[in-house]
Image (cartoon, rainbow, N blue to C red; front, side, top):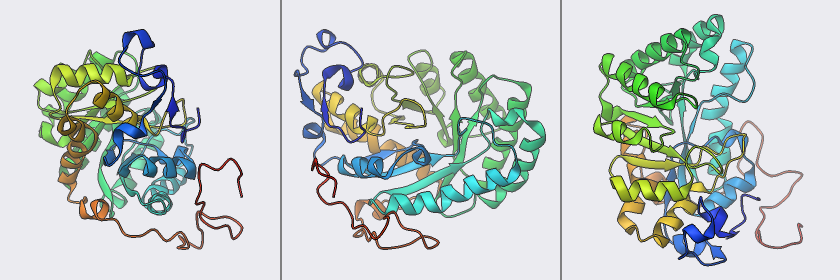
Length: 337
């Protein structure tokens, strides 16, 4: 499905068949339900997305986002590739986002998969301090466990200490396999290292992990993915059960099957399901700000009172425009001029 597409079948808007959500009309334009709302996506891998995705997100009310450093689908093989990637997060990607009126932040870290290449991981740890103090870096992340190996444990602990030294929030990636075990282990180690749970965002939660995360005082983040992890129908149930405190939703929108409009679509479904506007605002906007603003890097005036976008601006001589093209005005036209 094209990321800018707004006409949805209920099975796309809800994570279930229509008969499970009988109060959703046969055809739903989710934009009708989120008009005037603002969204903050605290975990979205825009390196994997197109400029059309940026425009669609802006049109749907996304005003700010956080892009965590992550695994790109195949292992990086040298230190220079990490340097280039981290530089792109604080440089080009930040610029590209600004060209669509979206404020871009990032978290920087060594991801769990690549922690298992210990020779390279040791080199990456040496350069992380060169990036984590840069403008727009709001945390150490995403870090944690994947296969829950000894190497992952080692470099997770080292990065927790780095976060403490820099007074930055931590963004934890919980594993796809043995999630409950990995989540409990991640939190226990964070507490062992003396981190305040209020400085730790535990991501990729599900029904199996959420209660423990909240009970221990951590932030509980949920990635809304089509077909896996957490659909937005299930997300509605969680907010109805646990309330909106210390809960946030994100899209991830990585190189796999994902949807950069997951947050506004989830907000629309919450609205349809009777969740209050204030609860929706908390889980799709304010909670993410409160968690990551502890970095000292977020000024809400930057996106609540945005400046006009000038797409003629350049970053290292490059723009988002090609061949002298002008910004696309009528995005709904069938004719691409």
